[in-house]
Amino acid sequence: MTIWLTGCTAGLGRALVPEFLKAGHLLVGCGRNEIALAHLKKEFPDGHFFAVDVASDSSVAEFCESALACGGAPDLVINNAAIIHPPAPLWEISADDFDQLTSININGVANLIRHALPAMLSAEKGIIVNLSSGWGRSTSAGVAPYCTSKWAIEGLTKALAEDLPAGMGTVALNPGIIATSMLYTCMGEAAADYPSAESWATTAAPYLTSLTPADNGASLTAP
Figure 1 (tube, helix red, strand yellow):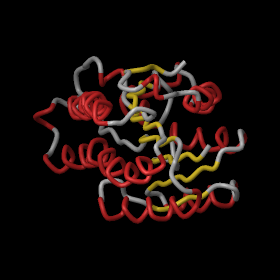
Figure 2: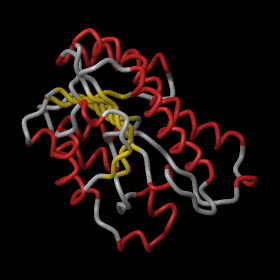
Figure 3: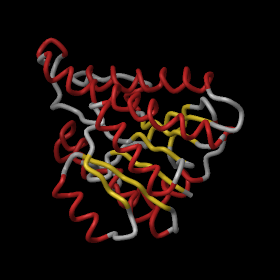
Figure 4: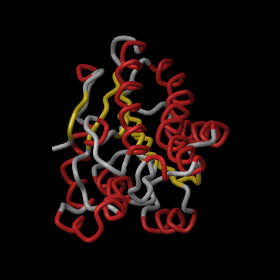
């Protein structure tokens, strides 16, 4: 299986890298942290890793061209890249911070879909997984920008599902509460009470590769 993965340099994306490669999949990943990308290339020479800013449509277009050259149209696209800001009431979030978050968490997803789907449509195959959150289906104080972005992902995914032809699919996936750096940003040391990204990936990776067109339009939660 050919897999494209955004946000592969940290958190859930980084944890998925060894699981996908160990299973024998062709993995093409991207992220913004060039130092982390250099470490990935050294540790996982069988993978293909690129520096990409998903908020930039032109950067994503270049990535998709490179990814196609690596292994053709993807069987599975995982829109994982996202950020969160320290909790604060919405009126205390600056316009720049709000725009930065939505440009990555929403526009970044749309950018990858825009440039990946033509090849997938030509191949008449493929599943797109857009990482959502519990905060894409509920709300909490202090995280309005993040909730905004993940509720948008839920709606985007369901609308996209109606545009896709038979034999393809897209789902919104809530990964659950995982002890990533993003969770530490929100919860502080209490985040340590939750499973690590690495333990999550051992069950999430096979779950992701098991998704089929029958799941199209679903809002799912990782096991």
